[in-house]
Image (cartoon, rainbow, N blue to C red):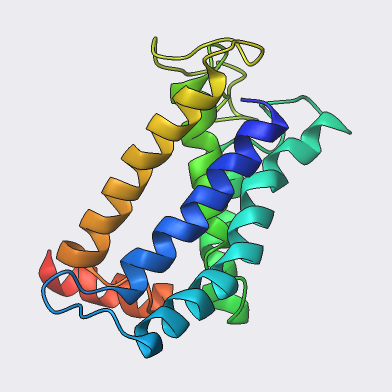
Length: 174
């Protein structure tokens, strides 16, 4: 995807995650307070998710695009960062969804195991980044990503807790 697609993805993710993390579908009653909490959560999520969604494309300025910063070791760093330093929560979601969008939404794919392997991985579902359908594909992929995130949040562990707490909860369940 192009920069516009990643920004669209990040904005929709921040909005959708705000709803997922604020609204309990089993007991939600719309009020002024709930609308304020929703707006506050979206505001809190917007910057880290957008930064995470745009970060991998920094490799267009150096290194090899879709290799240098589009791989699992980089994602692991963003997953570990909150565990070690206690900040940058939700940036990993932006990075991870950037990877998904590049693998599912575009034709080229990414080098998941770089620098160990330059092999690029993708699914045959993508379109060219210049395609007139690129925005529609971005929206479809983002809705699917939000569905997965909602499933994780409602059925596995809360995305609103620290990754250390989530790992402990996940380990206890498994």
